[in-house]
Image (cartoon, rainbow, N blue to C red):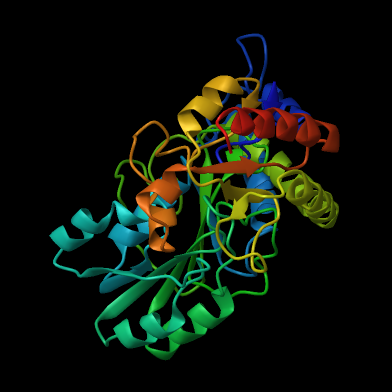
Length: 365
């Protein structure tokens, strides 16, 4: 099988797996302690959690604090529902943001979805026009999960700041791939399994002067904002994956750009969705008008790719991201997403392209 769905999830790095194994201790080990217990085993587990926290934080903006969560969805919900004031966001955001609209409005706050430009980047003029003294939060993703478009974060943050609003960045597709340290948002949400870490853990970075109301109550283990016993194994795996990403970011960017150059040649004749210039190079969202994507997937079962975001796959609905950039339902439904990264080889891309192109030709395209 050829895996080309890196935006949905990534293969677990061997180094992350090894880091996790130590903290999955059985009854004969001394590594199964609760990290919130005061005895020696608890302190050992707590030390592993804090070491992992430092590794995760190394890829975040400077300063602030990093809180472990069950994933980016929880981190995004914590901010959207734990802050005050009206919310502004964009039409191509992840469902973890957009689907909070009802809950935010139930708190008596407005939730406004702004348009994006035809290339998929945030419409900054629309943001300026929508800001009011009541705006408390602007939510914007760094890199779009469906089309790979990189948003103008610095400009959006500056505009929000000028109106006194805080900024939440969904950095799930950017963390470990693009530098976040040049930016100064108020909140950053990330997920481990997008950077070759384990599923079931993510993090929320908070600027020093920020506060939130907790969603989950109990022991208040994570900075009194998130209750529940942490998994040292998941934390350790996330930390190891973050360390690998930190050390190999430049090499990964070079590798992925090289793969994109190959892919663009292999898929000549397909149309690119989203900006050709402002993009993460490991995400290629392309289309052939009239393509039956369900048939393509059936004919190319050895290639793991997506018809949109993993969260919406199989729903039968056109991608809200592709509709937001002006594609018709038919054009959106004739699009596929190819995602590649650290462990993808050029030979795999060539084999996948041969199968996908041959199957498209069988459809007369």
